[in-house]
Image (cartoon, rainbow, N blue to C red; front, top):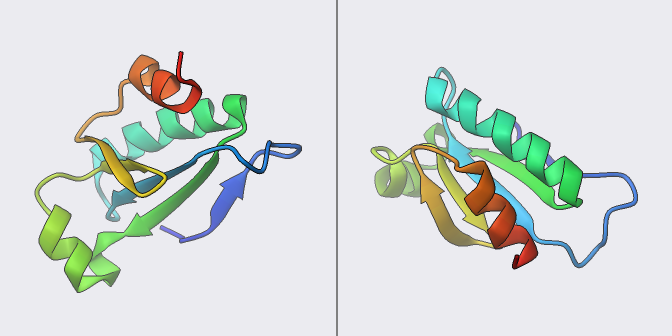
Length: 93
């Protein structure tokens, strides 16, 4: 997983940032990535991934909850990403 920040072309620079904490080989992370990628691309939000195996503190905190979804640094979800709930959190609707 790359810590690369992806933002849709022409996106609103004030849009929210979604961060997914996960690890390689995590099938739930693959499922979450698919939903997050689709929703953030449609809404113009930024999306970044962090590999908890590369950060001992993140690993200690989140090893049993991955994938963990953060919005602007605050925990939003873990284990599964509900598309409707994510959209609501990003749009306020």
